[in-house]
Length: 552
Image 1 (cartoon, rainbow, N blue to C red):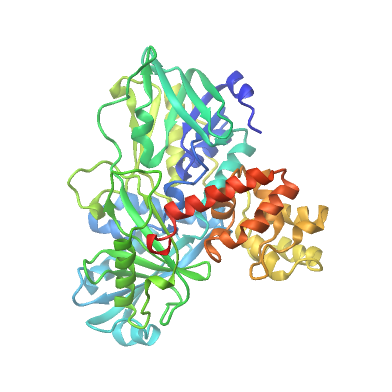
Image 2 (image 1 turned 30 degrees about the vertical axis):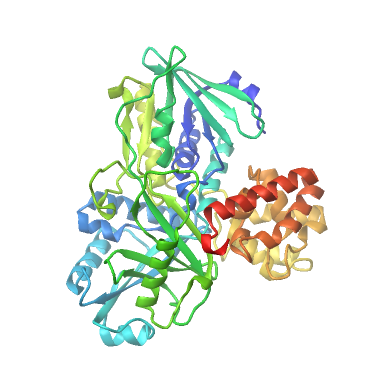
C-alpha cells in the first residue's frame, strides 16, 4: 500500500501537502474531477487542528457581529450539504443561548442576529430559531444562573461528533476515485527552478525511506498544512541551497483548549452557547459521547505546534465559567476525563484581539513571491472544507488552462453515508444479532456508518474478532484489525484516538492497551517488541497532549 517506487514513477497533476480536513477535501474533489492527485501528511490524517476543534458544523452566528455575511452564508450552505452527504457523521444540534442583562450582547442584539441567521439559511431543512422569555426559559433550564437573566434563544446548527472520521472518509473517497494518500510522509525539501517547484522531496517517517514526487509542466502544489503552512514555505530551495518561499508570515493561529467531563448536576440536555461571566468570551457546553465537551479558549500562540496541551490556567478558566453559568455543577479538576488543545489556522493579524481575527479563508497565490505553481490555504474552517476544496480545484483547472469538470462533492455522499432508518441496519441486526449484541451493532453504525458492514463481515470470517475489547464497552476486536488493514492506521494513537473513540474511555484508553496489542499481535503481525514501543509512544502522546499536568 505504500509503494514509493510507483509514486516516483508517476507524474501527478496535483500534489497536496497536509492531510487535515481541508487537504482531504481538495484531494477528494480533485480526484473526482479526474486529476491525478497525491496527498502527503507528516503525521496521521486529521492529527492537527481537524482533531482539536469543538466539533461543530455551524454558520458562525458570532461572525455576524463582524459583518462577515458572505462567510456566514457560505457556512450555512455547507452545513446543509454535510447534513445530506454525511448524515451518519453530521447531526442537527440544538443550541441554547441564555441572555443576561449585564453581558455584552443584549436581548435585542441576539434577537436581530437570530433573524439574520434564519435569513442567510433560507434554504435550510433545520427549524428556525425561537426566543424564550424569562419565565419560559427558567422553566426549561432550571439549573442555570438566574442572576440578571432576562430570557434566552434557541436555534439549530450541526455537530460532527467524530471529526477525525469526517476527514478520513474524505481521504477514502479520494482514494476510491484514484488518488494516492500517504500519512506519516514528511516533506523535507521543495526544489525551485525557473520559478517553479520541480518536485517534492519526502521522507517516510515509518521506514526512514526518502523519495521524490514528480509532476509535469502543469503540476500545481497545494499547501494545506494548517498552522504549519509557514514551515512548509521554509522548505523551498534553489540549486541545493535553502531558499524560503516568501518573506511574510501567513499564519497567525490562536490556541483553543477543551475539557471533557462526565455527567454533572444541572447538566443541560442540549448544547449551551454562553458568555463567560469574567470576560464575556463565548464558549460552548456540548453533550458529546455521553459526556460534556466544554470550550474553547482563544489565546495567541507562537510556540511548538507539535506538542501542546490545555494548561492549568485554561482548565481552571473553563471549570470556573461552567460553574458560574450552572451553579449546581460544582465541577473541580477531579471531574476532568480528557483534555485537548489545538491551534486555529488563522491569517496573520498582528495586534488584533483573537476573537476578532477573520475566520475567512484565503487562497494565496505564490506567483507574487516568484513561485508560479504553489497555492497556500490560509485559514479554513471545519464547516467550509468542501467549498474550499471546490474553490482550490477550480483554481487548479484555471492555472492549467483547462476547462473545469463539474464538481461532485456538493451532492455525492461520503462512503459511509447512511440514515438511521436504512433497512441495512435492521438487516445487520438480523444477520449478526445471534453473535453480537444490538448495542454493539448500533455502536458500529454510529461510528462507521455504512462501513460498519465491512467490520461485521470480519466477524463472520473470524468469530473471535467479534469479542468485546472490554465488558464495559460495545467495541470489538474487529475494529482494531479494520483500522490497520483498511483505514491507514499505523500507531495506537491512530487506532484509539482517531479511528475509534477508545481513547476517551476509562483512563485515557490506557486500560485497553493489553487487549488491543494482543489483538494486533494475533491478527496484524505485530511483534511483542513493536507492541511495547507502541504502548510507550501512546503513553507519551497522552501525557504530552491530553492528560493535565496535575494528573501525572
